[in-house]
Image (tube, rainbow, N blue to C red; front, top):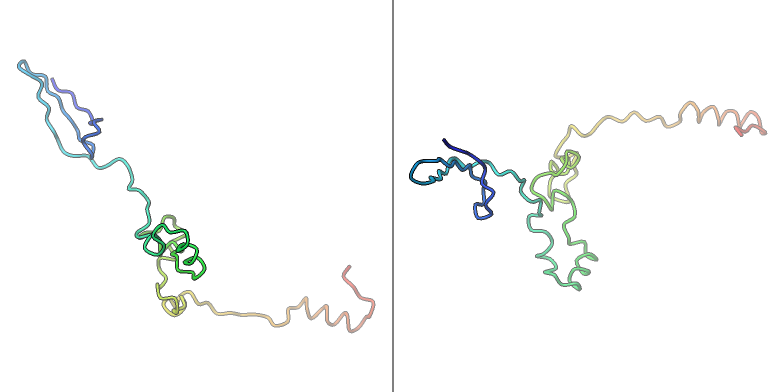
Length: 135
């Protein structure tokens, strides 16, 4: 007869499937295949801003004034945390490059009306009747 369970032992870092077989002489513990970790890895920044300020309050405020701190998600994390942040991970890390230059599919043709029909109506009404008002 054998009983299998996942190890609750804190000394075994990845969870291990333990099988205890009851034999007439002794209890034999057999370590079987390691299971995949059940917890997600912690979400921590790659380097963060520690290299800039090194836990100094004065250096931190200087870095804030000079905009030296990494604040965008693609600067702080290796992978996007949400789907909404996916866009910033496509962008170039060079601050001088516009996204339209690297990804031309972003640009869309613009069909703007310089004077909309409502604006033309208002201009015509004001010119033809001095007392005209919408209100």
